[in-house]
Length: 115
Image 1: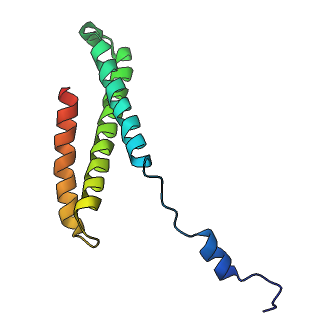
Image 2: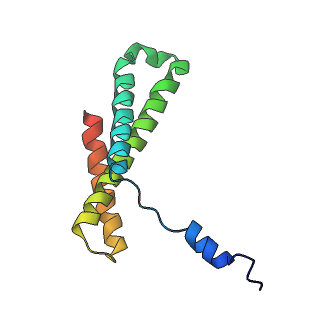
């Protein structure tokens, strides 16, 4: 290899170096997801019960339920993972984490959908 050519391995190592996200990223993401949950809840509140007779009006409420549920689940996952990072050392049991996460997510979704 000639000394004029760059070392590909070194260039890749420099380009693929891990970058830590800003500290406020998780908080901003959680706020945005909570806003989606609130908006979907407002959409469901504004939907009239007499509209049940027309299936064409079911699209927006169904989308609101889906978006709200996904966002509430994501908020719960963010909360679980951030609490886990603070509380547990590296190399913790992933099976136990998944069990705790599932429990926390179901509780969080129930809490947020009861409003």
